[in-house]
Length: 444
Image: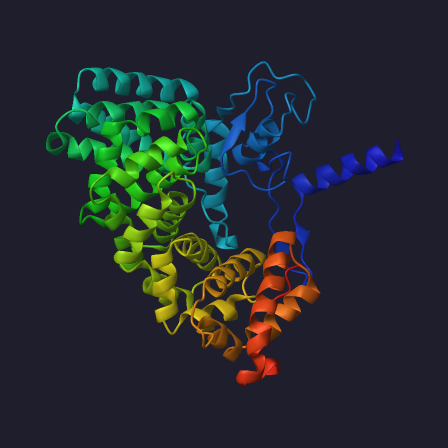
């Protein structure tokens, strides 16, 4: 009882008086009605629940998204989970901020009302109608509106995505892709740029986007000179090939489409951004590891110069890029043509040995796998790549990896490599292992 009396007295004092700070100066106190009951901070976007209590929107939305269906203050079950903007309180807070600007208080901006599920459904219905009528201009305006709303806030984006926008946009892209490309290029571009915001897509949406006509449009965008089109197209293709559903069918379509492989490689040669380069590497990786005609695709990539390109990239690539580039090389070196190209390149052994224990566990496993493939297929009597590997300290690195531990498959390959390298150790002078191992990373 004494405790509750003290709380009431403290509450009255906070509402009526001004507190002093550490320097003894008068400090402004925020009125209790202007504070969010959850965070106790000044509300910037006050909303009222069906219980009649007002909260700051971000705080109460987190509460509801966590699976709570009661009012935090009254514990009453909420009749509706849609918070209603409290314009009266918001206006009072703004007036109070203006009155106290001499104390360094900034006026809170008038927040935009977030989009509702009903509004999203109405827009999607209009897109569907415009799509059936092949009204590209109308559809373009509606898609632009959806994209604008999604970019306004994370809450808007979640609401738009949860209402099946990805499916509607994918269906619209497939529908307009069946008509003349030149006539619908603007609406297709707008739909694609909006779709990228909706990732990841579900199976139904990927089905529309993976249709033959839609795939042809994506490749045309990928081959065009416009940077945003190329970026959005490669991200959409990555979304398609990363799914196990119909992956082989999509990869088969992709490999047979004229200019597809060249366009993907162009994104690596002349990068637009890190995301598009990684997406291109991911697609190529799936094409040479999950597709039924890997060798043909691998040989085509080798002829286009992918081996020296990736080796140069690996010299100073960051972790994610490094892992993907090594994964692609690992697949490329399953082909004899790829291995021959690697053996001719002076960067191959120094780069591969350097990546062991320096980047990540995945990079180490790929590097060991590549070394094993190159050394196992070496046919020169003088040792060839085996000598090169020893000269850059591969033997010591592999011994250390064996001692630190690795997965069984990698351990077997390390053992094989040590057996292959051992007979040539007396013929060459290895690098100083102490300097070579500076900054290495343990795999665990």
